[in-house]
Length: 153
Image 1: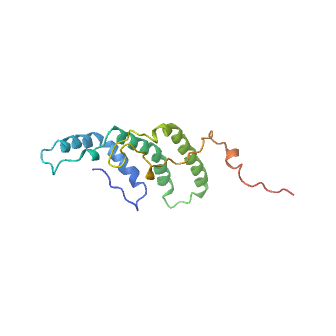
Image 2: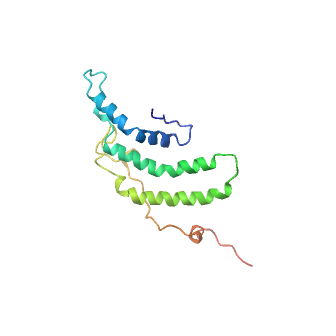
């Protein structure tokens, strides 16, 4: 069974998408059976079927959110780990920039089809976000270069 998304449970979307990808074959078999039902009331509309673009989008989602899932699990216990948070945030930022460079061509796919995406972009309001140029990975000295310099006496 695919896990349900839940607003109050962290990473529930990631877990439900990951489980859906694990169950891809049974889901596709179910879709084929329900689409071909003779009874029109029990037949699933074509717009609700998962296509190749949908599965690809779910795979991209898992690639991007897996790091967030790992960090959430790492910091959820009672042991204080505040010293590791800053380094983890910088690592996540660099991870998101790498993922953006990998998937930048797939973000606005006009061929995506589905109930809300026919010939449109995949972003809410059908607008592309403003993307900044991707900088090379930061070194430790570059990370803190934007901090104000102390006045030495």
